[in-house]
Image 1 (spheres, each protein chain N blue to C red):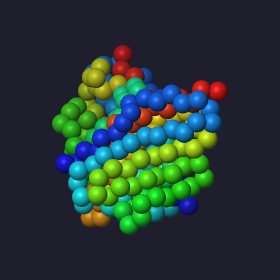
Image 2: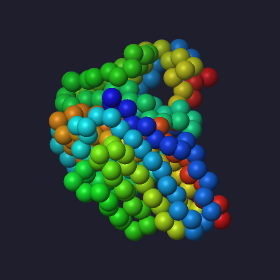
Image 3: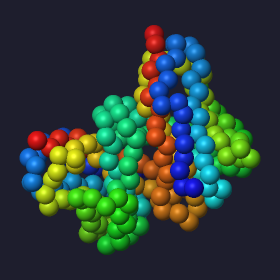
Image 4: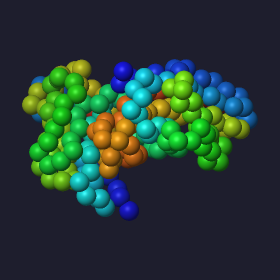
Length: 112
Length: 112
């Protein structure tokens, strides 16, 4: 029940295309859903996050879509660029908890 | 602003040798602190977390231990390293589990 399931494991997208990564969770107590971006040899960095009181959040080319009833959320990268090539992790946390639960990660490669 | 320092960046150690990795956070008080391990091309495995000085929770039984001697200092240790301890070790902090985690740049540990 504490798991966050992330798919796909890897993704290849043409430059200018849309990258879509999906995550699903079981624990309805989760109330914070961040996405992290990790480049090789570096620690993950927060990309964008959403709370369950909204269904969508957009920051530049990055959009989180959140479906509370389905317990799913996704990251959309519009106009994908080679510089977006990285590993992306979805995650979930809850008020009063101590841990953030991470998905297994998606390796994105954007072809020039 | 808050910063997190993690060192060393890379470390090569023989099997059976001790280990001490240090992580310090600046610019915040009473953070939650975390140690993760990441195998090559894999996800984040939570090893330990701490919600206060001297308070350590272990997630995975193994050859490692953690200590928090000061509010913003988190240390990962081992008395005798195993080959399976190789990996990328990441320290992170957050104020609450429903707020972002901030990661250090990691330590690449190779066991020979």
